[in-house]
Length: 136
Image (cartoon, rainbow, N blue to C red; front, side, top):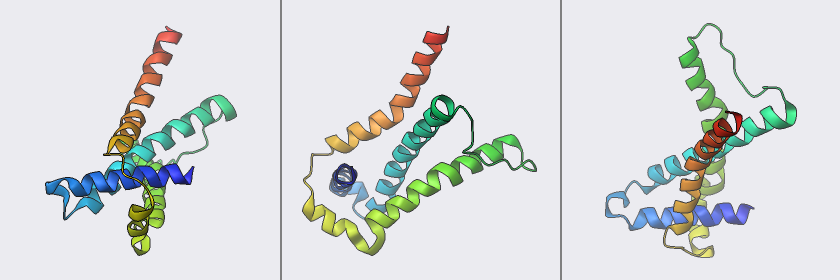
């Protein structure tokens, strides 16, 4: 499973490096896109686990002194974005590990990353719409 993660990252990095606008700041762009995709997958996984497996919502932060919208954004950042960001940093960017990975894994012309990102963004929406139609 980690091999697939590294392949997607290598595909993302090489694709970003080939874009003339990204040559100097590809680190930031790749980190944002991969963290966002991972966070969407994490949200989907936790929602399925909480709703259908455990039948209790346990992965949340309740800060009653904050307005609900601020609490929701803070919860999303702390519980979903931050863990994905830390994992990506530790496994890819720490000690420039990406340099070794770029030599080890093949490049799929950005197709692997694009498919991963598109599925990560669209799957929750498709499942939500499907659930609405099934429950209607």
